[in-house]
Each structure stands twice: as C-alpha cells, then as structure tokens.
Image 1: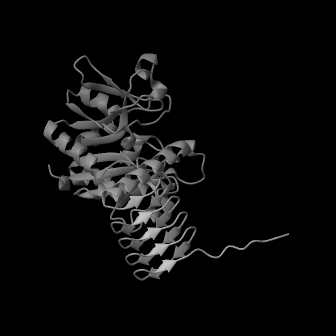
Image 2 (image 1 turned 90 degrees about the vertical axis):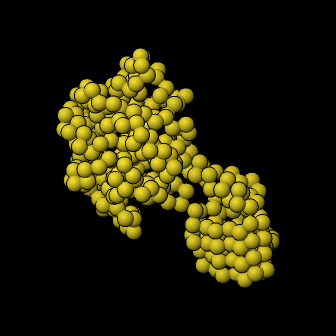
Image 3 (image 1 turned 60 degrees about the horizontal axis):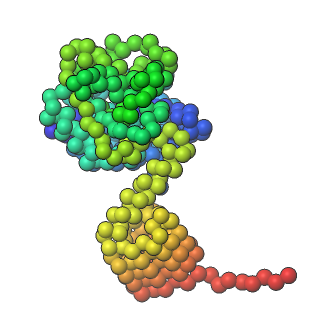
Length: 340
C-alpha cells in the first residue's frame, strides 16, 4: 500500500463551542494562517490519492478559505458526531476502495513525517484499523485508550462516558486513524448513539473491530504537542507559540541570527539569507525575501518586501511592498518632542 492508495478525510464541520466565537473553529488564525491550512499543508505533503474535507458549520466560509487547495468537499448537514461526519464522505470513501486516513481540522501541529510514519506502520502491521495515541500528564477532555492485559487496544472511552478508573488513564486518543475503507463504512453503520452526547462516535469503530476479531494497531506519538487539539483560546495560543518556535529553530539552523527568538515571528512564506541578524519584536510576513548579511532592527514590521544583501532596517520601521537594493539603509522616522 503506497501513499497513492490512501485518501485523507479531514473533519472540519464543528462549531467549536469552547472557543466562544462566532467564527468556525478551523478558521481561527494560528501563525499567519487559518488552523486548517496547517493541517492541509501536512496532509498534502504526502503522496495521497485524494483529500476530502468535511464541512458543516459556516460551510461556505470554510470552503472559500480553502480555495486553491486541491481538495474535494463533503457536507455534514447536521453536527451529529465524528462518526456521522465521516459518513458524509462515504461516497468518496466507497468509490476509492482504499485505506482512509482520518484526522481533524483542529490539529495544526501535526507533521507530514509523523503522518507518513503512521501510514507506514499501519501498512506493515496488517491491522484493519490503527489509532494514533499519545501520553498526557493531564488527559482531561480527551478520549482514553482502554487496553487489555496483553496491552492491545480494547476500546476508546470519551471522558463524558468514563468512570473514575478510565479517567485515570493517561494514554489518550489523538483523533487520527488509518482504517480500511470497506470496514469503516460497515462499522459506522453499526455505531449507535447510546452515549451522553447522543452522537455517532467515530471512536466506537475500535470496539466494533475487536468484536469482529480484527486486529487494531496503535501508533504512539512521542511529541504530545504535535497532536494538540485546539478547542480554546488557551490552546490556540499554545499552538501559535509552538509553530513560531519550530519556524525560528529552522531559521537559526539555516544560519540566521535571532536575538530573543521568542519575540520574533517570521512566516513560512519568508526567505532569509545566512548571516542576517534579526532583533527582538520583529514581525515578518507575506511573500518576503531578505538577502544575506542584513540587519533588521527591533520592532520592525515587514510585509511583502524584497531586500538585497547587507540591507539595514532601523528600529520600529514598517515596510510594505517595498524593494530595497544591496547595502540600502532604512532609518525610522525622526522623533518629535512636543512641549506643553
């Protein structure tokens, strides 16, 4: 099973009530882009046959935000749970006859390489269903992984349906699955709504697979942050900080000096040459190119700029759609002292 025999289904239909927002959750911006863009960038970094996005709440706005991405859409007309959301894409799943990679549009920290390792592990295991999990110090709000004496997964229990013993489990469901398409559709049609939410839980396919005597595999993601689900403004901020740190580590590895990197934000669409020095509180976005040996002063903001080599930008300078030649110097506006 190569990547081309896998289709991805991304669930992006929910309202995100814990965000306390009038905007669909997956459209909230994290590190210069709606969070679903980060998920799609990770998925489209794989060699998959097709990617399907399931939309529902604010469907038109979500689909408009994904214009330009090579994806198909399926509509979940009522939000009746994750299993019900996957069934909205059953036409695409049934016609493919392949393995389905399922993930949520609110996991912006997931990496392409992690998804590829997950797919490869699923293929090698021979399991009909594989679940991605991780270990959390505080597993509150996540579905717990219930295992047998042999260490194999028996079921996934959502927190609202868990007793105290299950709530004490620290291994949680990351909400990412690899599953045989035929089994998936058959199992979802057998899932009931006997739970406190009255919803069709995708997680119930694990117990169904075990009941059918099928093998269920699991892939433990070592970096718990990578499978962080963004359900609140607090988690939104955590995800932003993580993506900012990843980007800054990449830049420093490539030979860019960042002074106090925690205060510096550089979008993925920015290219910076080696030996450039960036001072604190700098914000660089848009399609910006900066040459080598440049110095960007504290508090500078750059958007859609093109700079040659050895350019110097002073502190608190705002530049938009500007071209700067080699060795050019841009100073901040002169200060004025106003006296009473």
